[in-house]
Amino acid sequence: MIIIRVNKDQWNAVSVDEQQRIEQGLRECGALEASVVVAIDDSEAPFDTAINHDPDKSPIKDVRETLRDSTALKGIDWCHANTEGAAQVVCLGIVNSSMACKNRGH
Image (tube, rainbow, N blue to C red):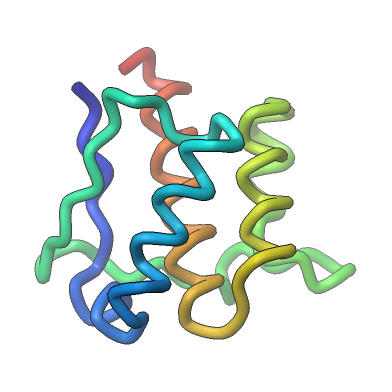
């Protein structure tokens, strides 16, 4: 089982319906495997899109450069197509954490 931790304040900024939609959408597109658990954690650092900006204003530069993974790109594309604002930050943070776990072999 892989545990993906999401900052509590960022998660709570998104409606319950949107939270469920994000998890379901990322599972359906393959960015989150069935064994992945999304855990809300008030000690988890917020996902900061400002750190991950590239010149074309994409908040997932590090993910794209590091992973080159079609699963990650599906998740990222899903986030961009289906979320905005706080929900998009949460969505991209989940994809980023999930792919980081996969890169470490978890």
